[in-house]
View 1: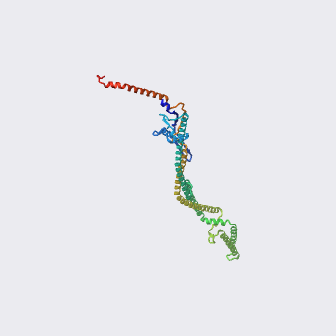
View 2: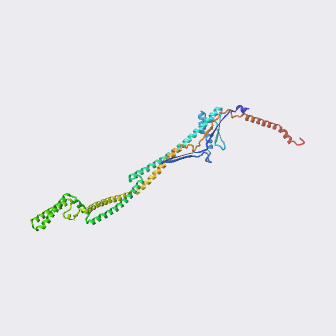
View 3: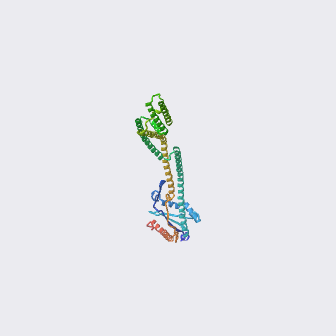
Length: 425
């Protein structure tokens, strides 16, 4: 009765928390950029670490009690430590807190749960900040690697004139095609040379003389002079058959013929640019089929000369390209290696950024998701002292006291009787 009269009343508020047991995964694949995936294991997948035990210890931590007490305007010494119980074979966490009245107990429970969730959020934020800081450091290294590789590629491109290795392979293919064209041109040039040689043999005349002959017989003044020469030659022939060698008429005809011939030769020398000694080597019968052959000889020879010039220019170009491509071979291989390194560095950089961003959504990796299943209850009856238990304990104690007094009262006669002799007894 004294205990019941003096013991302060205590009210218990009960709340329950639950941890979902499933994990979460996310995967992002960006075309030509990179791939990022995140996976949070189930909170109960690791048999060596129990999240419920971790949270049980965290709920009773001094930091959370101090935060809860500060929110209530009290000292943490004025609050009793919560009683945290784990329900076997479940992910439930049962919390019991006590207060001097029902409202105080409920407020204490709400403050404790709020402080617990605030602490969990701070721990998660600190973890993400630490991961992001380490991720940013790695990203800076990746960024510098990409910049260095890009600078090396730019320097190599400026030095070689190549934008990529495919351009060098395209130039190699073009060089091979050019060599094939050169080989075809060489065959065509040989065939043309054989054709020109056959015409020279048939006409017994070099192409230069044939060209001069055609040029000369295309000159109208020269043709007029040839007509005069023909006329004077006819007059001279007639005079030669009629008169003697010293006859004035024959001498006059001879002088006229010589004058016409010299005039024709002078004109021929002026037109062709040949000397008087070389003029007799010109063809004297450019009429009919022979004129056509002379024209063909000149035309085919010009074609041969064009092919020869084209062959020489193409051969020089092939040699220059050969030397240039030989010098570019090592640079192209180095450029391809640098571009491959750049592609790898860029992919790693993009994947690192995607992975860093995706980890921001994985906030439950280290601290699993926990939810409030039951809010702190408002007790209707005090939990301490328990009147029925106290009354039962008082009755039991009274009974035991009476039994002790009774045993003490009957002890002396019994002891005396046992110790006395039969005669005394």
